[in-house]
Image (cartoon, rainbow, N blue to C red; front, side, top):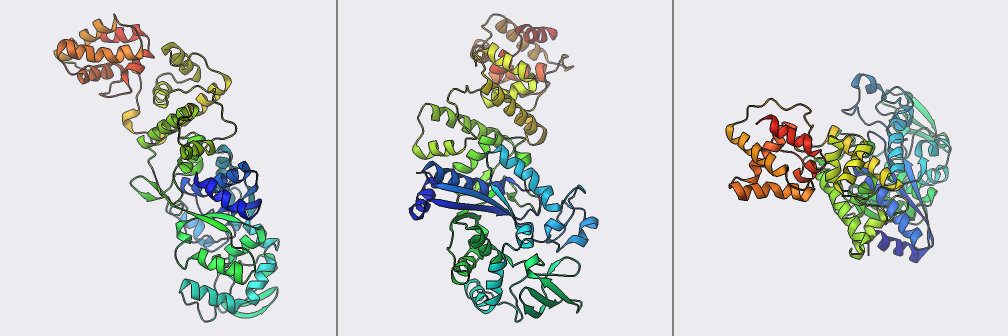
Length: 507
């Protein structure tokens, strides 16, 4: 049974309706690694609803959190003064709107593309609108008990004058301070300059520390399940303290959970927005079909890390997905893989869609350019007999992804450009002889992918010359490169006379 269905069944044993939560602090570009969290949550929502339950997905934008430092992708001179300020109160890097919106809006656009439509909870507004007031008052009135839980569970000693609130200073920055007075809903503290500052807790002057903020959201929003990264799941970590706080102090239920592993960028380590080591979710969707992104998350167990290679590995991933699709249509998949494929779909899946090889599409996108010419080539080669509306839409989406991939992460080995004029190379007598062999052979065979592919090995047998020498010559005269796409298909997509004229040019 797929992991999402296992979780769904456990949740439905307790009750029929569930709030599934996900969230992030929008401190930088929201990347594929973060996408794993919300796609994991979305899979469980789908599984619950598929089984007759009622589940809702919420996404909490933790924009009340402060800018912790000037990250590598920010202008130091511009943002130094904003360190410590809530993300919702900082201008965006483009000068338009707020900092949190700058990073959240493209992420929400990406979510729509992968078929995720959560209810968005603006955490900054939650504080400003007093949504957490009841929990805040309980926590502050029971600060000794809260302190004892945090110290006992985490094993860390809190400062002597610790108070369960992150104060807001005169300059708008969130800070620690020395408590002077607390009388709900006001708290006064002394800042580092010795100034006395007063906060109104009901109006969002400051916020709860993370270990108290998290269980407060569970209780207030009615969260019954949440997926989160392994950093929160360490012994004595924020989940361990949160579950104790929510049950013992806030008198509410502990949400069920699942812990997910990181997505690693091949050769560089785990993705992190703050370090700039990441590919944003929005950027990813310019290179990978959305259903493939979902499948990359749905296929493995959440507790297994994913190594993502945006280069040739991306091409291999799409190939694997397409193979799974065909196996699914033929009902040859085992249960877990079949369910992972179903959870990867965006909207209704049609078994009538006709597959085209992604590698072949990479070739034609470069050699033909427009979707009309690409379709014409597939029809000419005989790989597809006709295209329906759905096929055309899918082809267009995939071509755009291929163009984005070629522009950004594709290795040079897969890039090429057909040389409209014969390359000015000095070929040896031996290479000229190979061209004569090729000209004679290609002039007489059926102009089909397999026949063209086989012809190179026929020449190898006939002249006792390695087929790779013939391949190299052909790539050189057509692309001015030693290597290129799979030659049988590539030649079949071209006009015979163009290829033969090019061979004759050098003889």
